[in-house]
Amino acid sequence: MEGMRKPPLIELRGVSKIYRTEDVEVAALRHVDFKVESGDFVSIMGSSGSGKSTLMNILGCLDRPTSGEYLLQGIDVSKLDRNELAIVRNRTLGFVFQSFNLLARTSALENVELPMLYAGISGRERHKRAKEALERVGLGARLDHHPRQLSGGQQQRVAIARALVNRPSVILADEPTGNLDSRTSIEVMALFQELRREGLTIMIVTHEPDVASYTERLVVVRDGRIRSDQRQVAQPAVLTELEEASP
Ligand code: ADP
Ligand code: MG
Image (cartoon, rainbow, N blue to C red):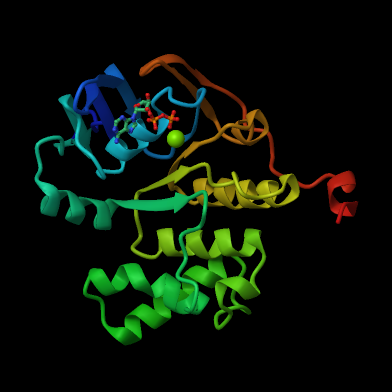
């Protein structure tokens, strides 16, 4: 409505996550308040065990907060049951993982078609969209290749195509360059920068300050809390002559 402010794409309000095992309780997130606007390109850093994956799992509707609220596109998803969360996940979110998570004996095209199978899209349309997504990430000539016939960087691009194929608003990537050399990492970050220019919202967890420097907002997590949250000018992800020359 005119005059009304659009809600942020993502808003966490006082979100805590407590893991309870037999004799210990771990507070993985402690009263986290956090907003992400549409089109944000965010990196999340923090030492091991600081709560980054827990934060991503909650943002990704893979897990629910113990307390607090999670508003996604203005809707409180913190109380949805597993099935409802799965629907939100399919429609709104795309995931990219460190280890690519591709099916080994399956072509790039079929890997990218997979999320649409669950979304009930016809075979013809699945094929068309998967092909488009692979072309978009520069793999139009590799549709029939199996993961082992592709380099690490190419496999991650297949995984990014798979994340894009249901036309999500947000891409969540947990250590997407963790298994890639620095040259390939830059290529993958260049692709994320391109997707961001096309209007996607992107959040990545990374250990590497270099990788974070290609994003526009740096969030540091420590002991389950957000320690700092700063806008920055993204470094352009382009290979220098030196990196071009290296094998
Ligand atoms: P990071 O991704 O930053 O390494 P995590 O979010 O994985 O951190 O973990 C945060 C804290 O929560 C750690 O102390 C970790 O041991 C604990 N934790 C994570 N997942 C579980 C779980 N499923 N059960 C119990 N404790 C967990
Ligand atoms: Mg982690």
